[in-house]
Image (cartoon, rainbow, N blue to C red; front, top):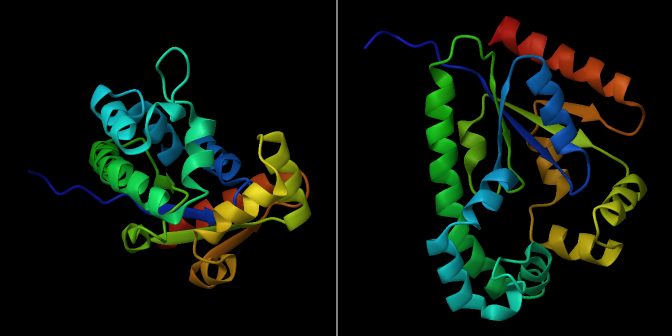
Length: 204
């Protein structure tokens, strides 16, 4: 096998509704490939074996009338109880990480891809910061995040409950190599991301 130049891996961190996916999408426009953990989770929840495990763990109350997993019901169930969240993570996380590994391997062989971006809500919590060459923190004011979260369908209280299960934002800021401000307009954000990528590509 020939030597493959390893692609830089960029991890994105930030609070819920801070705009991590927007940042990831901008990196994608600049020639990066994004591994989106939420998308992987959604596809896993369609798997028969995963549905059966979730049914055995949480009962039929988290399913809709058509027999599909109702994501909102499942979230309400697990975020109200640390043990249930831990049980769900035990089912889902190994499969998410396995799929992410496969994608990283696949993308590392594609010349046109500049870098691999990990958009994973629990990047720090599952120890994947070790895989990243650069960590980018998306800073966003709490009031803006609360407004965005409301549009996404959950209130301030749910935002707090979810964040209580994650490592504090202060700790994530400390880990970051770069911070992007997502408090103003998109063009300002786009410029920051272009600068960060160009710096990563120039300096490795």
